[in-house]
Amino acid sequence: MDQQAVATLLTPEGWALLESLPPYDEHGAMALGEQLRRAGHAPELVSAALTQSRLRAAGERKFGPFAAGMLFTPAGLEQATRLPVAARHAARFATAGATRVADLGCGIGGDAMALAGLELGVLAVERDELTAAVATVNLRHWAEAEVRHGDATTTDLGDLQAAFLDPARRTSSGKRLLDPRAGSPPLSFALELAATMAAVGVKTAPGIPHHLLPDGCEAQWISVDGDVVEAGLWFGLAARPGVRRCALVLSDAGAAEVTDADMPVAVPGEVGAYVYEPDGAVIRAGLVAQVAVQVQGRLLDRSIAFVTADRYVETPLATCFAVEEVFPFGLKSLRTWLRDRGVGRLTIKKRGTAVDPDQLRKQLRLQGDNEATIILTRVSGRQSVLVVRPLRRAGAGVPA
Ligand SMILES: C[S@@+](CC[C@H](N)C(=O)[O-])C[C@H]1O[C@@H](n2cnc3c(N)ncnc32)[C@H](O)[C@@H]1O
Image (tube, rainbow, N blue to C red; front, side, top):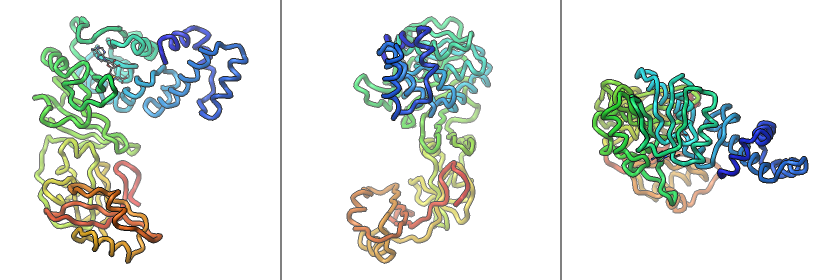
């Protein structure tokens, strides 16, 4: 999707053609293209419209039904914040009392749309010309949203008191950057804004090391359906008093959050009837102890993110497994255990052990019609095998 293709789509004929296309069907796309060309549409327009139709279909994953009225570039869609998360970002600014927010590096406008949707004025700045044009189209419904093509670090922000930044986190060769100092715009720029503005938010990679968390911010790790999608850093009025780290778990079942506002101490103890694997956002936020408290449990090991408890407690913050057996880890004993039970399919979960599951699976020479799930981990310092039965996935439905 280049500049020319977007320009073609923005002609009255181009837009009408795009809007007239049926829901995208990969298998029917060639035939549809042929039919449109035979009907007299220029091949470049047909190609641009079908590409955009495919991107809109892919965009539904992030934007739901709104994708059908949006424009995308492949890179812009990949980098865009999904709507439920963008809505949370926007809500921070609304709660902070902001009336106009700068979105500095707005991409195709995912976050800017959520801000505008809450009736906040938006100044969206994007340095890539094509992406800025796409954002302009996506923000067309909101009179209070302005898209400016330019470098955010040199844009005059006037008296704006609120800014959001979702810096590009890839090198020119496409490699992912974990360190927010290397993003564009860089973290240093965001920190300068945070020092002078009333409310600032920065989206960073979920793997941001804790030692890079700037002083005085609230860091929020968010997972969506089990995938940790970001760590947001919130400053000034966009941060909540008394919260430094928190994890927000979003799924079809709703939203659940733990914060460090009240930091319990979790101690390791004996394996109970259940093991809980905390959601990735909880682990990244370093808030496993909160899950232990919630399920009235204890850690399997002081340094490992598994919680064990004697009873089942419904929580969207962790996936629960019933413990069926526990024994010390050893290749021979594990192989014998599996062979005696005819286990041919084995799910291996591991934490705190160097074992390579694929290699182990080969060494176990699995045979039989039965299946099993094992957790390889340390229990109070000892390498152990826990044979478990999954009860539910974090955030999904009711216990099996
Ligand atoms: C991760 S994307 C933003 C995605 C956006 N939040 C969304 O939901 O659609 C980052 C964007 O920042 C832009 N960018 C990077 N450095 C910039 C700068 N100095 N000024 C303006 N835009 C910049 C990139 O071109 C890219 O489109």
